[in-house]
Length: 114
Length: 114
Image 1 (cartoon, rainbow over the protein chains, first blue to last red):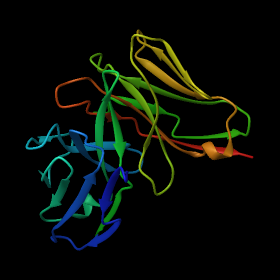
Image 2: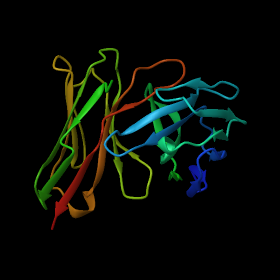
Image 3: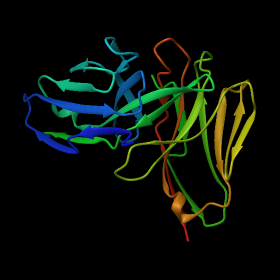
Image 4: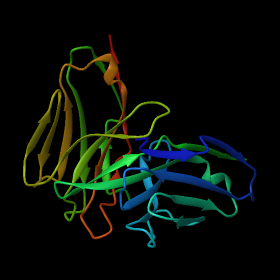
């Protein structure tokens, strides 16, 4: 199993450009998540998807959209990139273990917006 | 509003010593408290987790201590090794139908000196 995979690994955008970050998991997990990681702030939830066909906002959704394409894939789109969106983006999926949802993270996408 | 506060931001420990990282939370509805370990250029990986019905959980050299009344929990790494050098994040969540949405602390960068 590859686990959670993300593409691309690195991306540089100019202000106003758009792009889509791709995420896929092969663990048959129902729930998937998008986080951003900034220095000193831990990881903050952008959007999540409890199951195929559903998405909900997290803590910092402004400037982003998501699509749960199928059970495996969950994409994050920046319609008009801004320098404040320079960050490392992580996708995760989760499974229930002993009543708790254990989250598994991908390797991340490092995005720079100039 | 940071609902999970983590300290210290950085920590240097000698090989064989004990590393202690502390977290405090505000939301009494939280019912799942995981710790994640992250190496440079990698995604966070689940290390150990605890639920509030127990005060301590140990897995190998890693122990979580939980104080429900004080709303605090901590990670203890016994016999710290250079390979433990990484960034550690505490997190908290409350169960809901959408899967546990994690709220992360700001992270602690641990360096274990040989």
